[in-house]
Length: 355
Image (cartoon, rainbow, N blue to C red; front, side):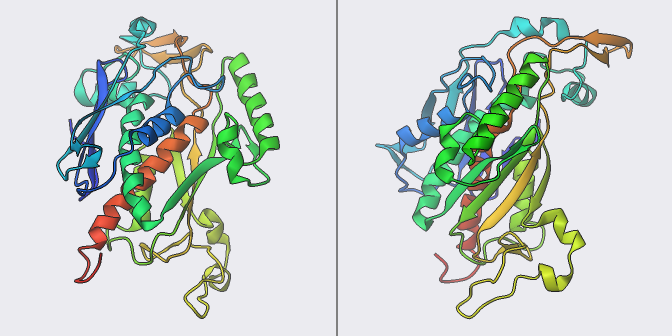
């Protein structure tokens, strides 16, 4: 099965299934000499783990990370760094009735059409649980990026149509919606509760900004910085759209309105491009937004078909997030960090003297 690896120099390969024994990641290309902070890895995993609030699945997983290789006395050795997260709270019986039925909004039909077999236990590799391996890898990438002073922040800009109207970064981790607006957060939480009570789900918009990325990062032509970030984000289950800077609003503007004019000293008068022009970082803040769909696993009765193509009715049981926006936020940061760690290493190869 291909498609399990991502990156060029800083390259990750994830493995494992939602209801298998464990999940994990192997990172190749981690430079030697990086201080590996196990407490930071644990902290990042806690932000993504299930069962953390009423807005998430009730599945309880501690998501303890075991470092298997590539680290000696808490310092990276330059060899492949492998990490594993054991599953401890599987309830595969919740999926026993789905063996011959395709769930609406899931990858079931696609996997079966491609391979002739699928893991019905939580979706296997298509499960959102796979992202715990990405968060572990992203924590390592963030440690590497700390040397550049790069800061990554993602947050819930909108959930169930409720938009954050104010921005206070210190509020993001204080509420289960991960909103920078405490007033909007309360309304978001109420909207998710209403959806759960109706046996339904909601989606939202995640925004992310990245500070202190030097100008010139990215690789023309096919590995543009925004192209690789877009691939990273769209690879997350549930993400259905991405825009950088003004995004689709730029389609309504004139060039004179959309261009980011440079000022003496190298600063920009605006940032309509979202910090990336021609596929290369400009040195300005990198900004992008993601459209996150409602969780497809809902308890309402739905129409579908079985393997024989016959119509069936389905009611999905089990433990599922009524909204994945809060838990996808640390994953978005992780994938952004992985992309930037890779480009940091590629930048060293661009010309003699880069470091």
